[in-house]
Figure 1 (cartoon, helix red, strand yellow):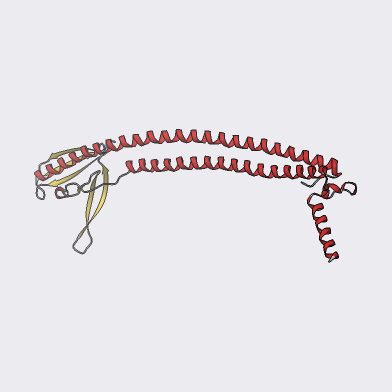
Figure 2: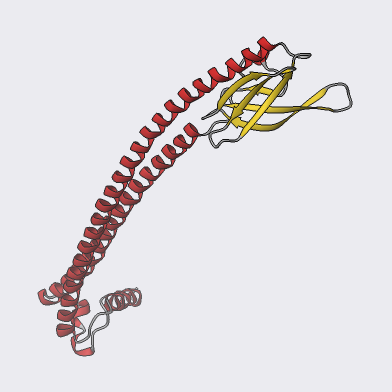
Length: 264
């Protein structure tokens, strides 16, 4: 039993010695001594180590939180900007739209909400003709006129860049009044299309204003967030230096008293 107790004592002695870094033979009591001076030296060293560990952990957390707030703020505004830009694109993007007065379509002209199509019928050999779109003209800025010849009536369209195209309707196949009605439908739809785009561009302008506001807020968020990160990093550096100096002082004191500098 005595040998067992002696073994435990030796193990505790060695463990305490190693924990506090071995002192030289003339100052071993600072590793395991029980006097006031020895206790004060060990307590100061432990306190300095603990302060450095806890302080570094705390300031690292402060910096990480500042960086996370910055990234979260930027991400929020960037997501909002993507949404508004997509909304603007959707406002200004459209296809031909729905059919307009299909019962009045004649020959190669087909009218839609935002487009006038020139089509051509092709015989597939099975008795049912297939229509193929030859050209699609946007109604924006389109000018439409009608006229008559000796053997046919016609509808002529001119694009905003001066391009012209016409559709002819022989009297042997088409009623002149029906041609006039189709012409009127196209003219009316050109007006409605202009109103449609006027409203869409007004809405797009509002979205542009919102995008500009979001960009300004994003810039302010970045500026504020980066300043907070810089402040946290500066504070962290100051605190690390402070606790590092305290630990170095405690290590110096230990070295002076114990004869050897502790590892950490």
